[in-house]
Length: 73
Image (cartoon, rainbow, N blue to C red; front, side):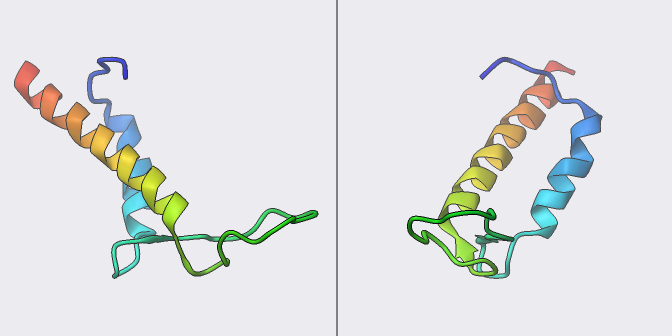
C-alpha cells in the first residue's frame, strides 16, 4: 500500500462501513447480482465471509493510516 496520509474526507465512508457491521461482527451480503448464476456462494441478508474479509482489510488499512498520521504530527 502507498504511504498515504490520513484524509478526513474518507471518514464518512468508514462510518458507513462500520454501521453495516452486524452484531456478530460480520458484514452481510446486501444483494445478489442479477443475471445467470451458476452456483450460490452466499445468500442475501446473511453474513458474508467475502464482504467481511474486504471490510476488515479496509478497516485495518485505515487504522494503519490513522496511526501513522498521529505519529507524523
